[in-house]
Structure formats: structure tokens, C-alpha cells
Length: 144
Length: 144
DNA sequence: CTTGACCTAGGATCTAAGTCTAAGGTTTAT
DNA sequence: ATAAACCTTAGACTTAGATCCTAGGTCAAG
Image (tube, rainbow over all chains, first blue to last red):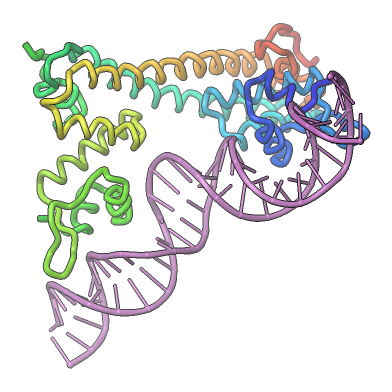
């Protein structure tokens, strides 16, 4: 059993974040001590880690709540319902992947075109690209 | 010279967003009319487009402010300074991409392993996977 | 038996990036 | 000359996701 501070420390988050997750129906401690202290189990910790991983890839807490809630309703849901939810999340993930890939491509192009040297940035291709009306690095000339 | 509404419309953003950018030291109109109306020049419009493009590549407004400060003071900054900003952002984006790809794989595997039928989800492979501490589908047995 | 670290609840505050409202002044078209 | 469309400011509100504050209760160590 972890007390709130122990679990928070173990997962490198704030105690208040755990209280916040509880208030927002994401993760409640499995029990309380005599004096009302929250007591989290190993299982609770695993759920928290799932939450943190999901958050790390861009799921909102609302989406995570939905993912987690499937489990609670198991018996009341058909497999099909669960699958729909997962497939919806999969589309979400793929949409996010597409956007990030776009960012990556643009940033890479900017980075690759820049000499990165100690020269003055007066002719920096990155700045030029951001100034131009294309968002693409068209001119790959360097500063030399 | 553009009035606020004209520039906003031309760049497809809200008038309030321009006031917000001004308050947050991203873009101030070059002048004001007799009656106090903001007047933006062609150059101002270019800076705005710079901001919007940088936003489109995933930079936060704080990061854009930094980019702009280099932009207006090019001669005093090295190319390396600019490149660091881009490369930091790039690593950030790539870290997220990696995590997201991991999630995509997991969700795909979950979806594929699920029969998607009208059976109760009590033995749904998806849920079983979410319960495990790996987020991977280990047991590919179905509900039947 | 008290000090310090930890915990409680409830509500206030913060950040990002806007968006909206109120109460009024200006410009333009008819 | 007056309505419609535009502009001004200050400040409140929004959403998501926390984080902090107040005022007090609990627990282990010296």
C-alpha cells in the first residue's frame, strides 16, 4: 500500500495531481486508512502508469477516462462496443501522428537547411523560411 | 495600412487574437490612427504570418517570441542559436512521435485481436490487454 | 510531549491561448 | 443625420490540467 505521497513520488507527479485524478474519476485509491489517508495498491499504481502513458501520447483525460471506463462496464458492453472505442482512439492516434509527422518534416527541413554555425543569423535559412510565404525551405543556400 | 479587422480577416484569425498578441509582446501595430485605431503595415502582416507559420510547425507562443527576438536582432545572434530552438522542438516532436507510434501499435493489436462481436465484453482481449502492465496483447485468444 | 513530516477537505489560483462582454467612440453608406 | 459596421479599453470567462492555500488532523522520532 502506498500513501499518496509515496505513489506520487514513485511516479514523479504531484500529490495534488492524484487528488485531481480522483476528483475527476480517473483513479481512486482502493482504500483509506483509519484516519482517512488514501491507500493505493500496486494495481492502482498500474492504472496510474497507464494514465501517464496515455497522457504522454496526447490523450486527454476525458479520453483516458473513457478507455478506463470500459473495464468497469465489461459485462454491460458487447465486444463490438469496446472495439468501436478502441478503433476511434486508433483514428485519433493516427490523426495526431499525422500532425506530428507534419511538424517533424517541417522542423527537419528547417534544421537541415541551417548551417548552425557561429555566424550572424542575418542570412539564416530558418528565419528566411519562416519569413517566406511558403513554410517550406526552398532555398538551401548556406550562410557562407 | 490595415485596420485590425482587415488584417485579422486577411490572415483568418480573430481581432481579439491580434490584441492578445500585442498584449503578449508578439506583434504590435506600427502605428495608430488619430482616433486610436491600430494600423498595421505590410511588414506587420509578414511578422504575423511568421507567427502563424511558426505556430503551424508546433511552436508555442513563448517559443515564437524567442524566435522573433532573434529575428529582429539577427545581427547579434548566431545561426546556432536559431538552430538550437528548432532542434529542441524537433526532439520534442520526435519523442512524442515515438510514444504515439507505440500506442498506435498497441491499439492496432488490440483491435485486431478483438472479435468485435455482440458477446459480452467480459473476456474481451482488449480489456485483458489494458489490464496487463505492458499495454500489449499477450494472449490472442478470442471470446468464443 | 512536542516537533516535523505527512495527510485531510475545499476552494482559489495558475497557464496557454484565446474568446467574449460592456460601455462607449469612429467611420461609412444611405 | 443616422444606422450599420467598425474600433477602443478593461476586464471577465473558457478549457484542460494541474498546483497552491487555508486550516486543521495524524504519526513517528527524539
